[in-house]
Amino acid sequence: MKVGILGCGAIANIITNFAAEGKLGVDLKFFYDRDMERAENLASQIDDGTVLLNIEDMLDKVDLVIEAASPQAVREVVPTVLESGVDMIVMSVGALLDGELRQKLEKIAEENGARIYAPSGAIVGIDGIKAASIGRIESASLVTRKPPRSLGISTDEEKVLYEGKAGDAVRKFPMNINVAATLSLACGREVDVKIIADPKVDRNMHEVHVVGEFGEMKTITKNMRCSMNPKTSVLAAYAAIKLLKSLNETLHVGT
Ligand SMILES: NC(=O)c1ccc[n+]([C@@H]2O[C@H](COP(=O)([O-])OP(=O)(O)OC[C@H]3O[C@@H](n4cnc5c(N)ncnc54)[C@H](O)[C@@H]3O)[C@@H](O)[C@H]2O)c1
Image (tube, rainbow, N blue to C red; front, side):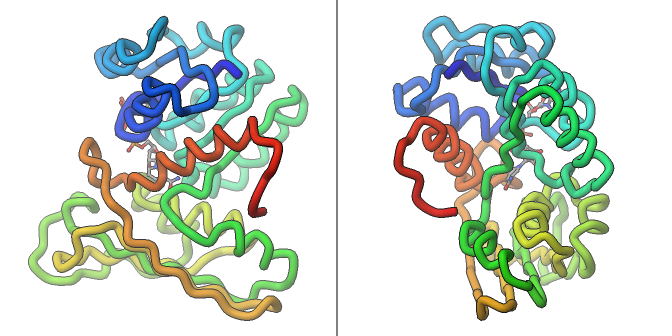
């Protein structure tokens, strides 16, 4: 399977390191970023790694594109990729909380025989939550606690930055709300979200509580942050890598 990357930042860097060591299980060859230097840096780590000036230039050469750029890229670039019948892994899942955009992308994908994958990202338990959503889910909540720097602020005290529905949070914290978006999509319902800047933590933490017909589930994820981008957790890149590997696996474990 031939793969290209859109957005050559922290997540793409970890994925490319795996590819360079021959541990990705797919053929990652093409790199696109609006910052050419970033694309060149990653392409240079791969034999025959190629930088492209436009995303369109890779579409007749790849089976799948990994979006690891921004919610804006999902709106502007992903439709073009799907129109070419090329599958997508979307990391900026927050963009998919916009129901109109999600339906548009699903329609384009369906008409062109493409698939859209949203990996579990920086959170554990998505497999169980998807299974739980087969029955009725009564409530789902997420408390995200990050070091202030990861939320782009400076404070010596714990500060609640947001409390409300995931759909509203995504407009205020587009780069920090992917977990809430993934959780909402997996549950099939709006999730209650609290975002806290906490100077006492050095990890990106997510506490999830789901209650439904299946029973009750609580998870806590304490994520190591990417050195290249402290907003982003290493687990998010690992989830994309595992998803890529699973596309070639015969035995699928988990939902
Ligand atoms: N699903 C999850 O759990 C999860 C976790 C962490 C991050 N993310 C999301 O994944 C995305 C990438 O994260 P990252 O930490 O690698 O980001 P990053 O900022 O380190 O890198 C993003 C790269 O994409 C490029 N880019 C941005 N918009 C672009 C566009 N429209 N066209 C071309 N290039 C563009 C930037 O120049 C940059 O090099 C972000 O949207 C982030 O919010 C998702």
